[in-house]
Image 1: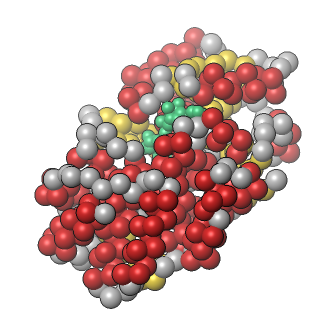
Image 2: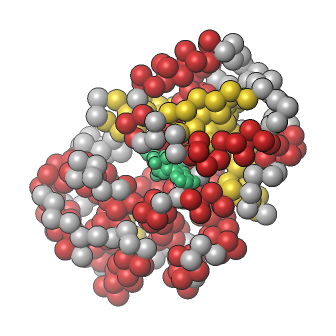
Length: 355
Ligand SMILES: NC(=O)c1ccc[n+]([C@@H]2O[C@H](COP(=O)([O-])OP(=O)(O)OC[C@H]3O[C@@H](n4cnc5c(N)ncnc54)[C@H](O)[C@@H]3O)[C@@H](O)[C@H]2O)c1
């Protein structure tokens, strides 16, 4: 259906089923002997058999993790290494990551380190993974309560998106992914943002063609950014729009809210700072609140503002504890700054939490 090529490194295919998976592996000259599917115990029930059917005459091994962020740790990685060794998985094997961002980050980390790197394919099944985490090569696990603190940059050999997997995704997980989709419009593409606003009903109704177009456009935005700045030395940081606030809010909530909900509050806080500095209007902020609320991802909360600020000072993207904020110069154009005062940041958190 759709195809994006990242700087001649790998292809992202967007399809309505799994039928072309094997054809694309052949077309992209991706050779292997054994296949290891890493998935989680939710996704396994829905899609593992479909994948096995595609490779019916081949040797497919499966490693299933318990679904959820708690699995993203070094013990799980240890167990997977052991499983690979016990099954004589060598460098000519391939890892297929079938699942959301948790599975993708784990499988990518294993693939990048086992025998100094074996090929892996991303088959993302959440909206967040399809438009965000499966693209760009960041892998990793959490350590000592710090998210994604151990990890690598390692590109997949191919990304295969079957948009039909979204049908079984819980609604709140779909909404979670919409925060990233909306973010893409704000940071880089006003036209795309208008598309999301115009087609919001169809998106909510899971209209396949609209979803395919949306995922294609979002993947293209992410792909363009990461192909210019693979290791996050510059422009890639604008993808963190709303995220410094978002991570700090997630931490303050003890991870009781979804990532997208933290990001949505963060988007509004960042936009409020952009407004205070004269870049955008109150009307722009109102529209952002409306679209985020439409997708049920912007919810007001009674969190401690000072704690959120304190958490922000520990963000690993900061320079010398100077909080880095991604702001908007216009709708569709973002930039990074570490020159926002503490009081302005506190005011912005307060504003965004009020709804
Ligand atoms: N590598 C990156 O660049 C990057 C970027 C953003 C986020 N992340 C990471 O991604 C993770 C979050 O990913 P996520 O939001 O996809 O969460 P997730 O992987 O935990 O998936 C969410 C839930 O949906 C279930 N699920 C997945 N696909 C399904 C489907 N099609 N049908 C039914 N249920 C399904 C999962 O089992 C899980 O319970 C975090 O660990 C985050 O750090 C990584």
